[in-house]
Image (cartoon, rainbow, N blue to C red; front, side, top):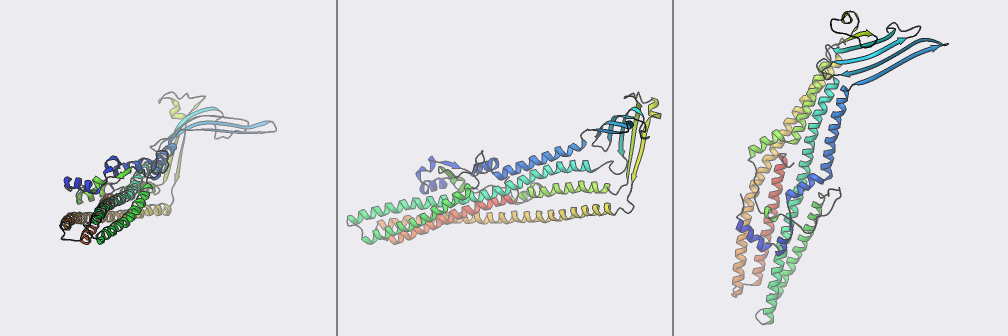
Length: 464
C-alpha cells in the first residue's frame, strides 16, 4: 500500500529545499550493494569460503598416488651382508581399495629370507573386508570438508544478514534526520519571511512591536530546533559512514552531495504474508542452514564411528614376477603359483572405545536437533513480533499523516484570521509548533516503520 503520490509530491515541494532534485540519491539498495562488494566483513566471509575450498583440496590429497623408495645396505669388513632396494607406487582409491606396484631387488651374502634374491616385480591390492570397506577416515574427512564449504557459505549469508541489518538501521536513521533537518530548515525560512513582513508592517505603523518580538522569538525557537536536527544529521551521517569502503579497502565519509531516498521513505513496504515468511525462514534461514549442515557432518561422523565397532580384517595380495613386469595373462602360472598373500586381523574384545565414541556422536546429534528446534521457534516468534509491529506502525503513520494535514489546515485558517485582524501571532506560532511536532512525529514513525521492516526481513534471513 502506498501513500497517495500527489500528497507525496506536495510534501516534497513544501518541505524539501529546491536544490534537492539536483543532488544525488543514495538509496538503501546502493548502500547494501557497496557493503556486499567492499566491506571488510564481506571480504572476510569470502576468504573463509576460499579456505574451505582449500580444505577440500587437501582432503583429496589422501587419494593421491604416492611414490616410495626404500634402500637398505650393510657392508662390514669389505663384505656385503645385504643390499635391498624397493621402488613402489601406491594409491588409495575412494572405495577403500588400495592398489600398488613396484620393483624389488635383493642381494648380498646374508639377505633377508623374506625377500626374493635378485630382481622382482609385483602388482597388488590391499582391501579392508570389514572395518573401512564402505567408509573410512579419509572418505569421512573429504565429505566433511565438502559439507563445511556449504556451511561456510551459510555463515557468509548470516554475516551479511547481520551486517545489512545494522547498515539498514543506520540508513533510515540518517534519512529521518535528513527529513527533520529539511523540515526545520524550510520552516525557518518561512519564519524569517514572516518576521521580515512584520517588521515592514511595523515600520509602516500597521503592526505593534510585540508582533515583531513574537515573530523573532519564533525564529529563535526554530533555530534551536534546527541546530539539534543538524547535530542529529551529522551524527547519523558519521554512523552510516562506518559501512562505506572503497574497492581498494579504504574507509571514506559519506559525500556531502549524497542524500537519502526521501521518496521511498514516504512509502509502505511490500512483503510476503506472515506464513510465507515463516516457512521461508524455516527452509532458508542461514543460521538454521548452518546447523543443518552441522547435522550432516555429524551423520558422517556417526557413520565413521560405527565402523569402529567392526573388526579390522585386511587382505593383501601381490602378483609376483622375476625380472620386470612379465605377468602375462590371467591363465598364466604366475596367477596360480607366483603370488604373495596376507591377512591382518584386529578386534578389541570389549569395544568400549568404539561404543563410547559412537554414543557421544549420537548425543551430539540429539543436542544439535534440540538447539535447531529452539532456534527455529525463536526465529518464528521474531517474525511474528516484527509483523505485528509493522501493522501498528502503519496505522500510526496513517493517523499521523491525517493529523499533520489537520495541523496544516488549522495553521492556514489561523493565518487567514490573523490577516483579517481576528487572531494573534501567538496563536499562529502555537499552531506552527504543533505542525512541526506532528511532522517530526510522522518522520520518527516512518523511521521506526522502515527499521522494523528490515528487522522483519533480517529475522526471516532475507537481507543477504
